[in-house]
Amino acid sequence: MDNFIVSARKYRPVTFDSVVGQQHITGTLKNAIHNNQLAQAFLFCGPRGVGKTTCARILAKTINCENILSGTEPCGACDSCKSFQNGNSFSIHELDAASNNSVDDIRNLIDQVRIPPQAGKYKIYIIDEVHMLSQAAFNAFLKTLEEPPSYAIFILATTEKHKILPTILSRCQIFDFNRIKVEDMASHLANIADREGITYDQDGLHIIAQKADGGLRDALSMFDQIVSFSNKHVTYQAVIDNLNILDYDYYFKLTDAILTEDAAQSLLIFNEILNHGFDGSHFIAGLSAHFRNLLVAKEPSTLKLLEVSDSIRQKYLQQSQKAAPGFLLSALNISNQCEINYKTSKNQRLQVELSLLKTCHIASAIKLSQLGSVQIPSATEGVKKKLPESVAAQAKQSPSAVVTPSITSVGNAPAIESQVAPSSQASPVNYQSSEMKGEVKKEVVSNIPPKVKKGGWGASASAIIPSLPDLNTIYDNNAVAKEGDEPELIRGSEQREVSFGQFIAVWNSYAEQLKAENKINLYTMMTAMQPRLNGTLIEIDVENGVQMDVLQSAKVDVLNYLRVKLQNFSLDLQGVMMEHTISRKPYTSQEKYQAMVNKNPLLDTLRKEFNLGLS
Image 1: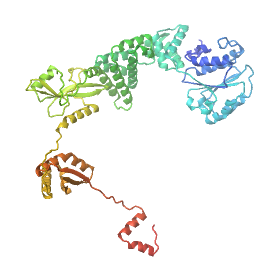
Image 2: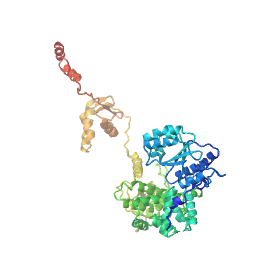
Image 3: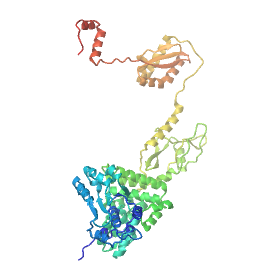
Image 4: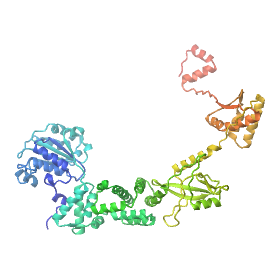
């Protein structure tokens, strides 16, 4: 039985052209070799499994190749190439910095650098995971890296460039490797499957490539695992079963249920997903990605952004035609908010289910919001808009009834339902019947309350709490409605002369009236301080800003009472803020002594007489 070699080793690239997805790196290196412009040190950076070490080995082999091909590729047949492939080259050395990261290891390397190559033009050192070197090892390596012998070339590789000293970075040519695209990985896997005689479908290879997250080595490892699992039949179903991946079909079925407002089916699909062992956070992250893909598929120009197979891309295209952009944006916002709150929630399943229920009601909420808003009529201009017959009939039968829309926010779209409240409650909408003309008159106009489904998951809740912006709107409307109710100052031409005795008698009479009406704050202020009458100006002292506000709010009522009783319409009222002298308590010894001297000046004479000091 032959030893099995994993695909990541068996199909490891041996030429620049066979490297997958890093053409910007390989092209630059080939040109540098062709033009004999090789740097003394290279630094290859990038995520795991994208070809850093592979490119370093190909570069090292090509530099020392005795018969470089026309395409600047190693021949693979000369002594240098064969010795490197067999692992016994004296000119190419590999060092794992993860396990050889001390100062002594670097000093041994420096001693080896001093010895010229026995075969080939260059002595090449490949140092993998170079970020693992200690601070002292980096410092010991600096001088050799800056001024190496003419025959020495260093190729450093790392996944964490930010951990390398800037002094090391400045001495290297830096090459940043990209994550390998899904399409490139799927194509590479298909080539390997063809060479190995493995049957496959394109959707399955795409799932492997997506799961690898840009790393080809990870993709090849998963490919070998699924080949063994499926007995050389790599199908879409075999991939999702073996890798425990949430199937696209779950999200397509769930979105169809959401678009039809079938909340019950949505919860059942979510329950089925949980029963298969998937985590709620994994599900909601996939749902957010699904809504994002649907939004991308709405425009033909962005369809290429979907990193999926052609058959899955067509499914996205078809389903995106059923969903409006407003729905997708609201759904994406809800799922994203759920994903943010998921880890801090005590009942995580309820968090996801609540998001699904909200998403199911987005479509109807958007339709309601599209009814449009109606302008509020001014005092001189009415707004003519025909009411639904059911609302008009209700208004005629019960003129005192008030129809109040309750508004809440579902994602970004409002959900509205109507309820009938007694006329004593504050309401932003008020319909009253007109006995004179027999028609319905609107004092304040808002969106017409829609019909609400009865029964089932599609029905709205019986009571929905308004959101903060809606409450602000209601309060603003109430404030506008109450502007006309504010009392106005009574004006007249009579200006009878008023004595202080007459004034204070009327003043105290009004204060007693306030006491009877239980307006204690204003009563206390009017009786605590005696007012002053300077001609027609009444001045009263107030202790703080709160009392000043109370006086300002009651000023019109007080003046109306005084003007009528005293028959002088030029009277005015003004509050005067009292000045408070703040005395600071003595703190230091000097301040305490000064306070005692102020009370008894002889104390200072006593101190001077006996030449006393302050402790």
